[in-house]
Structure formats: C-alpha cells, structure tokens
Amino acid sequence: QVQLAESGGGLVQPGGSLRLSCAASGSIFSINAMGWNCQTPGKARELVASITYGGSTDYADSVKGRFTISRDNAKNTVYLQMNSLKPDDTAVYYCNALIMDRRGQLSTYWGKGTAVTVSS
Image (cartoon, rainbow, N blue to C red; front, side):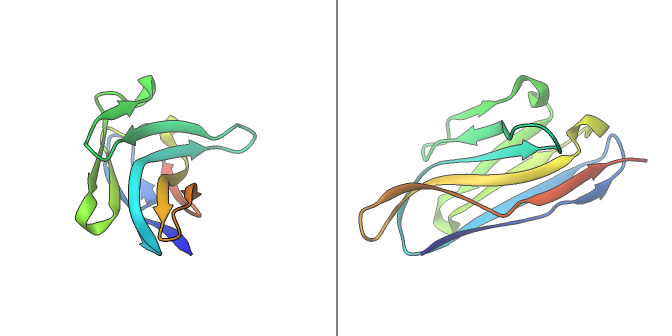
C-alpha cells in the first residue's frame, strides 16, 4: 500500500507565499515523476508543475516565474513553493506520483488534496 499526504495549504493574502509538501510512504520501491495539480469547483483537475527523478521540471504557463517545484528523493517528498500568489490560484492542490511498489507494479498515486485560498 502506498499513500501520498499533502500539507501546507491555507489562507494567504494576494502577493503572499505558501509552501506545499507531499510525502509518499508505504511499500515503495522507486518513485519516478512527481507533480502538483489543482482543481476548482466545476473545472477539471489541471497540471500545475511536475518534476522527474532527475530534477527536470515543467510548469503551467500561469505559474511560470512564481511557483517552484522541487523534490527530496531521500525523503520521498515533493514541494511546491508558491510566491506572488493571486486570487486565481485559489484551488485544492493535489500531488501525484508515478511509483513502482515492492511487488513491481507501476501506478500513479494521488493525495487527498490541500486547500489554498488567496484572499484579502
């Protein structure tokens, strides 16, 4: 069994910063790509940022220059540093990871989400 647990969401004023964390735990053999996605009511979940095991990153155009994704492979953890936050960034943020478990099965796992609200 593999679990992803996010933390770090909350209420922040426009222009502020938050740092999200997501730790993977359980029967993990290896973790490939990890990422962050966001979803608002009535809309599909969409990619915010992703990072490979080697550290190559990709970002949605809307967050380039403001958000930074990073990971600590020793801790099986991915982070999202969110700066210059805007009200449009308000969403539930989910982390995901492509993980091979100890049985050799490769699957994409999702966390339960952490809410980010940007408001004055």
